[in-house]
Length: 130
Image 1 (cartoon, rainbow, N blue to C red):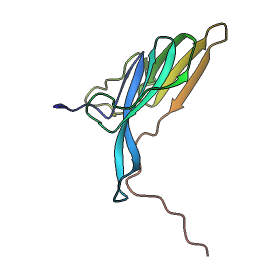
Image 2 (image 1 turned 180 degrees about the vertical axis):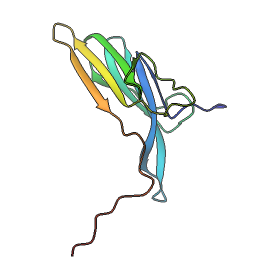
Image 3 (image 1 turned 90 degrees about the horizontal axis):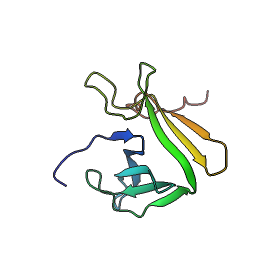
Image 4 (image 1 turned 120 degrees about the vertical axis):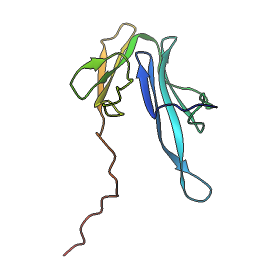
């Protein structure tokens, strides 16, 4: 695609992240870009094997008939932001993502997803039984 993109970004209408995807032919895990976006009264999820370009998968509807919907991002300071573009000294990920959904004629639904501050560097293994 000619450029790079951050592994996580978002604004009020959606978010995009890169995650470990499916196992490749040799058993290695491929990266996958996943986008959640709000468009025309629907919440859509779209995956893509192209992590630096535009999504190449077919969007799957997660919610329909939305009267209102929005995303917000919580910084490590506790401040909620309408968009996630961290400053150079900030972590790459927000501490939480809020998704507000309201279907026509229904009460609003607020989902808050807490994010891990950093991925573990090594797999965690359980101690051997004694």
